[in-house]
Length: 177
Image (cartoon, rainbow, N blue to C red; front, side, top):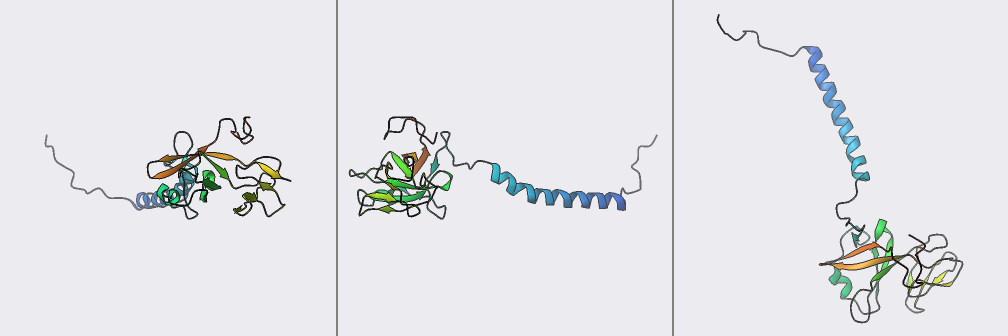
């Protein structure tokens, strides 16, 4: 018995080649469609175990803590916080960050608003709601105080986390939890 290799060279039939090309096109198309969808639903890697994120500017760039800590005491810095909500961070008189930030969304209809340093208030331009420096309602129609977030330093950056404990302004369970 002789053991020899067959002399015919294996080749693809036209049908096998077309099936392979069709499968490659379908796989490439599905990959380009599914990749952005998977990225959208996957949580960002920078989210901490407590749901915290690093503070960013309006363009999505990380803000070094030294940049905000270099400002004058009493300064309110506006950053993109949780879910990219505009959030005010306050620099205390001793040069440290206040342990909570105030989310810049009116509790009446969700408008964003500026801090007015002349009157020491947050003033919503939509319907005239006003809040004091801690986010408590001074004048309606806003029914609730402003939402708080926890602010901590994490090395060179500022970490913002959901506020889940009792509201320090009222001593009660927060309305946003």
